[in-house]
Length: 171
Image (cartoon, rainbow, N blue to C red):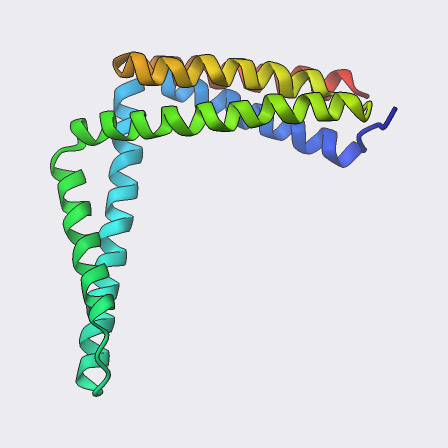
C-alpha cells in the first residue's frame, strides 16, 4: 500500500476546516452569501471590461487598431451590468451551469477512485464517497435550484468533515 505524507495530511486537515467554515457561513445566510459572491464576480468582470476598453482607447490613440479588444471589453462590461442588475436571475443560471459541472466532475472522481483502488492507494474510498455526494448534489442543483444554497452549505460541511476525519485518521 502507498501511504500519504505528513504535509498532505496537514493540508487535508486545513482544507477540511476551510470547507467546514465556508459551509457553515453559507448555511447561516444562504441567499445573502450567494448574492454577495455573484456580486463580487460581476464587479470583477466589470473591472475587466473597463480595463479592456481603456486599453483599446490607448492602443487606438497610438495607431494600433484592436477591435477584438473593444468588443471583449464592451461585452464584459454589459454582461457584468446585467448580472449586477439581475442578480436573482443570475443565481439561477449559475446554479444550472454549476449543476452540470458538478455532475461531470463527480463522475470523473468516481472513475478516479476506482483507478486509485486498483493501485492500492490509501483513501480511494473518500474520492468515491465525494463523487457520489457530488452526483447527488449536481442532480439537486439541476432539479431544485431554489434549495441550492442550503444544499451547498450542507454538502460543504459533510465533505469538510469527511476530509478532516480522514486526515486525522491517517496518522
